[in-house]
Each structure stands twice: as C-alpha cells, then as structure tokens.
Length: 128
Image 1 (cartoon, rainbow, N blue to C red):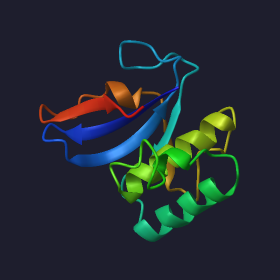
Image 2 (image 1 turned 180 degrees about the vertical axis):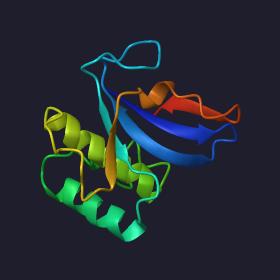
Image 3 (image 1 turned 60 degrees about the horizontal axis):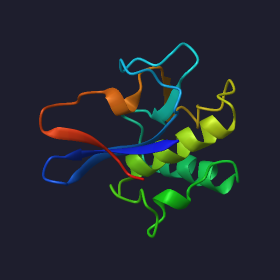
C-alpha cells in the first residue's frame, strides 16, 4: 500500500493523508472494486476527533504512521489523520458495508484520492 499527502508546492501541508490501495487504475478513477474511505468535508472537529479515537482505539486501524514519530504525521491536521485512520480501518475491514461511516464523519469514494488534481499550487506526494 502507498500513503499519500496533499501538500502545497511550498511544502506546507493542506489536507489529508490517505492510504491508497495498489489496485487503483491509472486514470484517476478506480476499478469497480477499489474504494477509499476519507473524512467527510464539513464534519465537525469534535465528531471527527471522536471518530478518529474510535478508529485508532479499536485495534483495527493502523494509526502508527500518523503518530508524532510516524512517517505520515504531516500534515498535522485532524482531517488528515482522520482520513488516514478511516481508510486504514475500512481497508482492514475488507471494505465491509458500514465500515466507513464513523457517525457520518466519513464517506466512501471511488475516485483514487492520489489522482485528483486539486489545483496548480498543490502536489500529491507519497509519504512512505
């Protein structure tokens, strides 16, 4: 699996880290079976923190990479860490129905988040 972060060209982190399945297509739209779980835009900070605590405390998600000494700690934002944890939980649950809800703070996407061109000032980079 690859880990991705979206950062500004000036190396300032702006949004989520997402664990990407290696089964994605090159077009930016994943194959029919590939899906990812990410934090829902507009989710409140308190709800996101509660969901992140659940995902990481359940023993299902691998949250070590988003800990302060982890390779994917940056960007250090709640949305980034939640997206990483949610997708880890979801992938480790074999994308089971309901594994990407987290009290309505997460959503499933079929678009490979590593392939989304956000703007010319943003780059998608691996955080291995």
